[in-house]
Image (cartoon, rainbow, N blue to C red; front, side, top):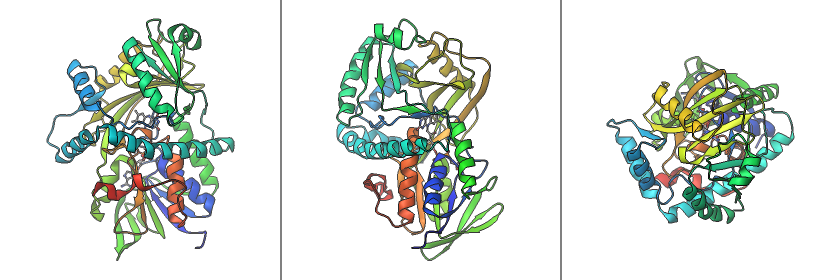
Length: 416
Ligand SMILES: Cc1cc2nc3c(=O)[nH]c(=O)nc-3n(C[C@H](O)[C@H](O)[C@H](O)COP(=O)(O)OP(=O)(O)OC[C@H]3O[C@@H](n4cnc5c(N)ncnc54)[C@H](O)[C@@H]3O)c2cc1C
């Protein structure tokens, strides 16, 4: 097969850029078509964690009951806007049915392979020094306010250790030395050195520049409207700026994938999971480590060039408005853990939609009825982390190369 294949990627998020990276490396001519601008979706203001240790799926045993209790107490980061939405209801029921130990172990294996694969590809990418993004290999501190929760994490850690992804227990006294920006009333923390972090918006800008230099063509403000199909092959995409032909197409439209796939009658269970972040200058007493603040299910990430609070999970459809109440939850959450929770000035308040699947595994597969279309979406809370692995798998599929990891867990047929 000739190396100079023509590929169109629909969606200019981190998944789209990662696919472009490996395809260009292989010699393909690549064009990204993006509705707004590169990085306009979830890939811009996320928490920037490369959380390779996060092998446990969201749908693990006890998740549903735990969230119901927290929702009743008003302490849950989860919000479901009350409305009649049949697809969301089915999605939530399927999610609940997956919350058991068997499924957790099975999904964890799939996640682990892709996370591990992505870690080694990130390592290579960062070593090239061609993409700069405030990248650091410091680890991630899971911080606990409550002693019982801190102790209970031991069991989770034992599970992670079976995947070689275990963390180190940091008791209160050591924690004061290690991370003085935390408040004194913290019970303890677990430091996972398998995790790294970077600044996502800088990554997107820098990766775009690097790939443009390598010949990537970018069409921005160019919404894809529909496809022109001949038999089981896509011939071209029609956009608001005209039509574009290619040999292969990659659909990387994140949370918006169901809308883009409507014409193809491919009904994928991807729900938009809304999250928020606030980006600031570094506070005077700033964290050294990125921290997940356990009881608040949120993250505080420090970089050399700034600081971000992020989290919350809201199922409210495609509404992308900034809800001040949800933003203030981030501030109150951080105040419970950090000596100086806020930096000044605030640079950005942001929201976007994560592409959530009910089994917490991404979808990386050929479309069932259009053989030259690859779907790459559904990365949920780990799209940045899993981007390199996804990009390489998509590239190998297009070039007919056997994937280097088992891709069965990411198949479309699992939903049938
Ligand atoms: C608050 C928050 C914190 C997060 N923290 C982390 C983290 O620390 N680590 C991590 O790994 N992940 C994190 N995530 C998740 C991560 O951001 C997403 O999984 C990832 O960005 C998804 O990437 P994507 O490329 O699939 O989608 P997106 O980045 O959303 O890109 C999809 C693109 O497709 C475009 N598009 C849509 N429809 C069309 C169309 N018809 N035509 C053309 N273009 C179209 C959109 O405009 C968009 O730019 C977080 C998410 C949130 C919200």
